[in-house]
Image (cartoon, rainbow, N blue to C red; front, top):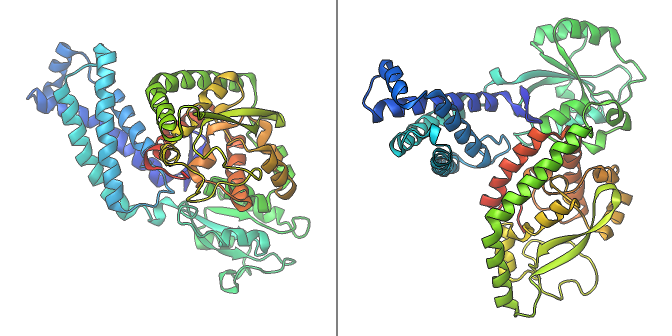
Length: 468
């Protein structure tokens, strides 16, 4: 089962874990205050009369902890790290949260409760989070958190569900089987097709089905309106294939996409409030990044000059395609040799020999992208959106990939949903995969979704995911 939070479909088990850990963080601050001031829990009201109410501090501490855990990928259901790696991330995230808590107490003195309480709260939260994670690892795959799904269809469209291989794509449901419509050619394996001698609603009741996914190749022949209506009225969710795949995989599957789903589906917000919130977030985030990242930018310029000579440019600009297909010049720190493309544009490759020593380091840390905040302030880009591509590649990809031009209906971004979900793209096949994530973002974009992407981008920067 998945629930929608901040524009993302999150497994119910992960959402429950976040809720539990938010409560644990809140309680950890109360327990820390009780230990630090050597008072019983029943004596805390007396402490609050002296130092002020604890609940605002508990809420602030809980929000900081959950934000840091999110930024370090600890609520990412697509994360593929072992338990030891998860615990290491947990330790680092809580160390960062202790620093953030101290900074908050310094900036907002009314929330201050002392370094001892903050330190104890972080230590207690570490112990509580380790226990919750160990328990979660044992029960996360239990069927209690999963929808019981029946697929109505057994042809090529239905086979896209059977072909889901990644555990993260199958995290939210348990597949009971397929029902083959009378006039449809079977593509899925015969052993996965169920006996449909019963009517559809009775079959769902017998198998404990909670959701029916309609995945027929041709709905004009034998579409079971009465049976699906009976299922719907019986409390069984009925979902279209594309909507199901969007929810479970976090992307829009182009291989089964039809224009009517885009036209009549929800999303694609471009109202004045959304445009204003997007621009406000861009300006505020860009100014904050400039203020914090200026020392790193100056050091990067110095390092490039030292490696390539004082006359070599530290910055370079390159034509990219932006909103509405308009071409603009994107700014980046130069990470390749000056003669990197003697024969025209070419894809970046893994271990690209054109990358300089300084370039390899700043690419891994994503420092080469920092000058793009100037593009954001100019209005050429947003902070969150599809990555802008070069005109030479856009013309090539638009001819070969359906719906590729639709990614230009929003401003391109420095970071985005595709950058979080898919590694660095360096081929047409990669461009197709990333487009599916870009379409998901364009369809579901919102201020809260942008904020969630910005927080999770910290994981990309800290752990070098997708860098080349």
